[in-house]
Amino acid sequence: MDVAATSTTQTTETASSSSLSQLSEDYTRFLTLLTAQIEYQDPLAPMDSSQFVSQLAQLSQVEQAVKSNSNLETLSAQFGALTSVAGAGMIGHDVTVNSGNVMLEDGVSDGYYMLTDAASEVSAQIIDPLDRVVRTLEGLSTTSGELLPLDWDGKDSLGQDMLSGSYSVRINAVGSDGEAVAAYTYRKAAVQEVLFADGELYYNLSGNESVPSSSVLSIR
Image (cartoon, rainbow, N blue to C red; front, side, top):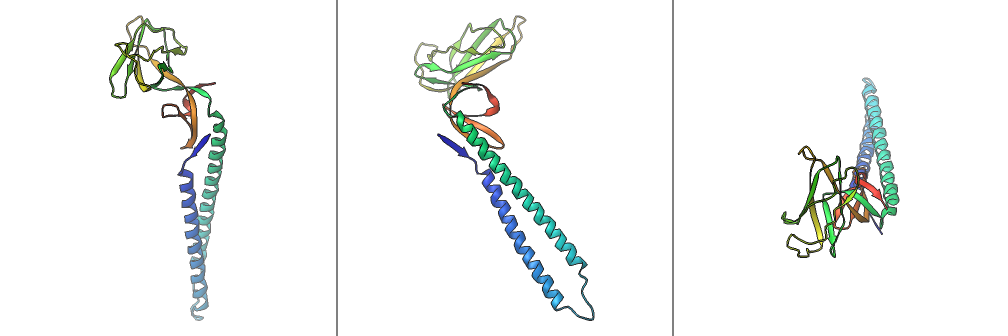
């Protein structure tokens, strides 16, 4: 089982480390300069140390801000790691996800659809990677609010077996009033890999499709 990690957190941690290192050098350089000026100041015209004290306070504030940011990034990295580990338990499970694609393998497709309202007529177009409609499925179920199988047998309009692979699906649904009815397409697929990116968990599915966990309708 593979759990992929992103480089975003590593990059921000490197940036924070670099900022802290630079700040430490500036801090040391400033103290050295302040010490030298105090040591070699004119006894008859002593320097005004208030500006140095003010700058020293500002440096301290910046140092605390950088350290706080670094701590937050560390917590974010730990959260991402924990989320990825927890998500690793999904590998091998079948999920139903919102997707405009359907995977065909050995004549078996994994496509489904759901209508938002009852329709009087529903059809589906199967589109190949070259954007060609290879099959139109007529007389599909008009029931609304349920996950319905696409029932594509993997053949084109001439009855020829299509090659295994990923195909797009377009649902055309019409209500009794002649108006279009909204429809969503789904597929059931096995989770092959889990990764955490941009604050969200993603599942890599069979057919080289990556979907956010928020698009998952059900898990089995």
